[in-house]
Length: 385
Image 1 (spheres, rainbow, N blue to C red):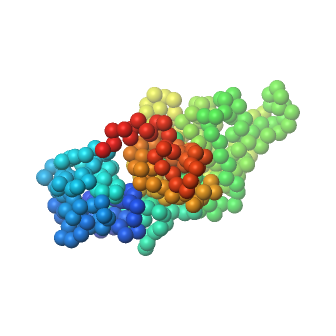
Image 2 (image 1 turned 90 degrees about the horizontal axis):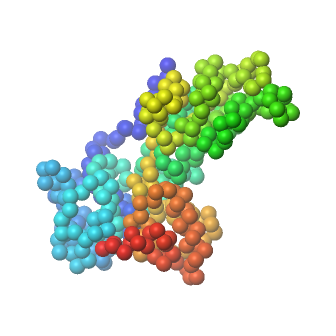
Image 3 (image 1 turned 135 degrees about the vertical axis):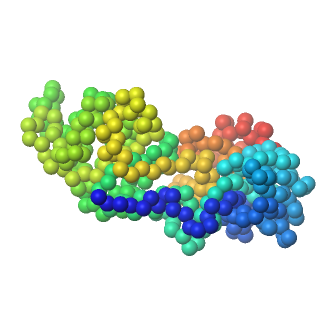
C-alpha cells in the first residue's frame, strides 16, 4: 500500500499567525502580498512607527489598530481621514472573522486567522517569489498552489481522486492537470454525468455491441475503453444512477469492462478522477450513492475554494481574462475593483469571466469602471461605505 503525506495540511514552522492578505491596491507593487501579525496589538498606518506600513496617500499616518482582546481579533479606526471599512461598512470598531474584508484607504485586505505567511510569496498580479507556482492554465496564489502541490504528489500513482467544490471553481481544470502530471500515455476523457439521460449514460460509459438494442447498428467503444491507459474524468458523479454505479464499481474492482450486448469482458487500465458539488456522504446515508463505490473513488480528495474565499486571486484572474479576450490594454479602475471585491460571486470564476467579457463589450475607452459592472452588483454597491 502506498502512503502519501497530506500536503494540504503541512505548514512551515510559525505559519499559524493571523494577518492581512492584500486583495487589491492601485500601487500594489509597493505593498507586501500579506502582512503577518505576530503581536497581540499592531497599528496600521502610512509610515513608521506603525507596525503595518501601507505607504499609500489615502492611508493616514496612524489609520487603524488590530488587537486581540482575549477572545478574538478586533479592528479599531484611529480617526483616519478616510475611515476604516469592514465588509463595505464604515466602523469605529469591529470584531473580525476569517475572510472579513478590510479597506484601509485605497488598499483592500482580507483578514485570515492563520497561514498569513503562506500568502507572502504570491503577488496579486500572479507574480510568485520563492515558492511553488500554480501550473500553466491555473490562475491562483497560495491556496491553489497548495492544492496543486498535493495533487502533483499523488498524480503518478493509480489512486482515484475526488475533486470537490462549487460549480465554476475549476474542477475539470484540476482533473486535466492530474492527468498531465500522471504521465499516463492514454487519453483524458471527460463525461458530465448530469448532462446525459440515464438511459444513455451506461452505453456512453461502457460501450455496446452491434445489435445490443434497437438502433445499435455498429459497435461503440465507450469512454472507459477510450480512456484505457489514460484518465477518465466523471464530472457530477453524484448524478450517476445506482445501476451505473454498480457497473463502475465492477470496473474498478476487476479492471474489466463488459460492453452492453457483449459476453466477454475486456481488460482496461484506467485512472478515475471524479468531481461533484454534491454532499456524497449525505447521499450515502440517503441510499442514493453506494458506499462501496465511494470508498473506491475517494482514495484521495481535495476541495477547491469558492472565489469568495480567494479574492486575492481576482485581480490576476481579471488580467488573464483580459489577455484571453484580446484586451490586455484595459485598465481596471479602483471603483471597478471595489465592486468586484465587494461581490460574493455565487457562480465563481466563470461569473468573473462573464463580467470581464461584459465590460470589454461595453467600454468605449481604455478602462473598465463601475458603470461596466452587472446590474446585480450595482444594488449591493449602493450601501458600500
